[in-house]
Image 1 (cartoon, helix red, strand yellow):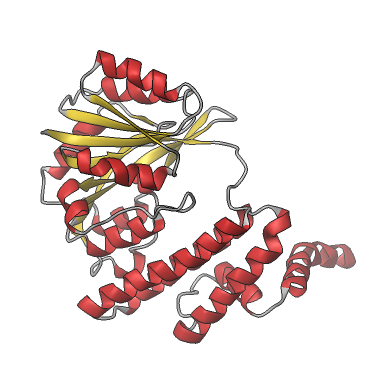
Image 2: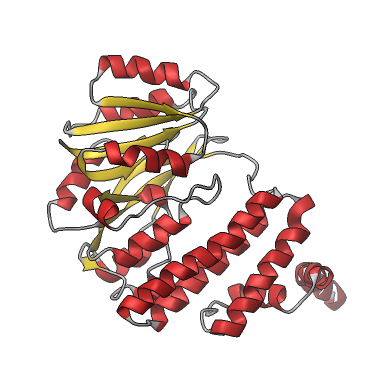
Length: 338
């Protein structure tokens, strides 16, 4: 047994593993294990992991065929022995004292989930900026306790898998797992975790460095667009099941719809041009479903509402026309005034 299990799925990460592993081994908190899952990497990741495992018995290496990060994380969780679980991607790394701070926070109360801040590290520029991930929760609750009921209208404000630590027994007992897809595999995990956690709290510290790559989106195939569509309804079913057991909560519903619609728009902005039209009509059908079933109460922000209604009320041609109009018309009016 140990106090913290760090779980990391590895695929083609040979250029980053040294930074990641050294940041773990250099921690001043020593009672941990690291479970690396080599997810069918064709590069030298597995060899690097095996070398480190020879040097430190706390490093455990698993290897399997490539099925995606979600499957890899699910695969290794039953082998974890720690009281608490931290998911760390192999291209990210820990700040000094990170594990000690996480462990000490968990000792304050019987928390199921802890939220923390991170640094954004931009690979192409080498710049490192604070990412105040927990602000919306910390501003309301400080370092106190909250749950789905008390945080209802902001509960789904922050998606990030990498910016939370979990009590392992909570994940196991509630069967909180990642979807088997290779894209947006963490949505179901996130929705279920924050809904069913009885006690959550904020650790107002910077714990990890989150490496951002200037890479192309993976959401360009028909298959991934279909995954995004199905994920919306799967997550809606998780919320409906929660409401059937705990009663409907308008704040939770609005926070959920805002999060899911924002995610759809976010991925739309990443889709390759050749798939934009297909994605647009998938998104439009979901918006029509949402508007008919729930209304638009969740659209509080004006700019968010404008985008939502532009998709909802227009076809592909008119949507693009409206976007061009909104961009060029203000400047054209200024030109006329001159």
